[in-house]
Length: 232
Image (cartoon, rainbow, N blue to C red; front, side):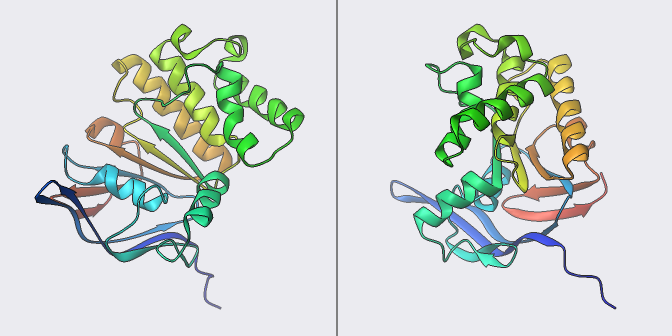
């Protein structure tokens, strides 16, 4: 018997162009990519190569100009904005370089936010958020606002927030870009541990060769196209 198809995400001839005044900026040019469930891969490339754009398209944060992105066979291009919002909330966890924590909320409230938006009960949400903050080493910082936390601590809050709804896929865009090398290494170690524990699909966009080398599979983007796809 043939093994069942374990493809989770697939990009098919994806193009993306941004209009900057009178100038068109072609960022992605016919990208094909297949990601299987539970895979850990890195999107590597210089600034402007298109890795962040591709990451956003894979997670439904942006829409393609042509081609398509499929999540378990469902076309993101054919989804309404409400459907994309539900998909992002329930199935995708985002981790950003600049953390994007809400400054008026403490760590616990920031982590709870996606679950509360998904209509999880306040009690259940808080239990899960406290457990996640404990997991990322912030058990005693739950009531601290972002400005009271270091960069590494803020990124750990962002990781916990990304995991609160137990997503199928975790997308991390330059997760160590604003951190010193030691703190960045601890964040990468944490992401690798979580990916192994949860058997989640983890995709990291980075220009850092050392970070990319932690992934079993590395995709190299050059001028909006995949130039290499394989072992680091």
